[in-house]
Length: 135
Image (cartoon, rainbow, N blue to C red; front, top):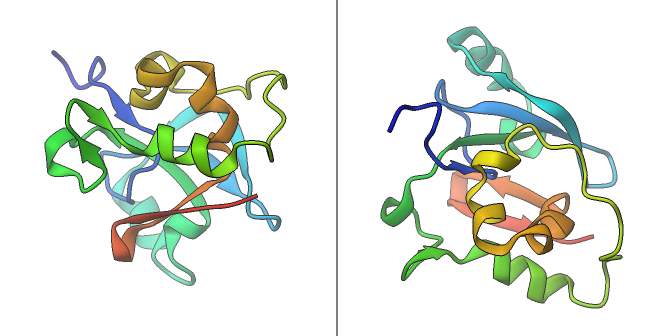
């Protein structure tokens, strides 16, 4: 399996293996770019100035699977946790956002469009290896 074919985590920390897939808005939601933009060393350096990059950008990278604290059993625990946390507060019949990684997204592969509905509310906190949620 090539790097291009590997499943992607849509909430990864900043690294040169990552791709920018969105920007965190002032309201704390993700504005998706529609196309994933590869990250290079210059971007990593620049992004590390100022606030935590993961609080400003939404990044995707190859899924770490069992090497990730959010992996439980056979899959990522985040899509179901996000869906449960947002139940009743998110409009679920809304059109899916444009996404530059949907074909490779671990969350989408596991949970389908249900994962996409809550995805815009997830902001990664790399320093703690955690994910912050909330509308």
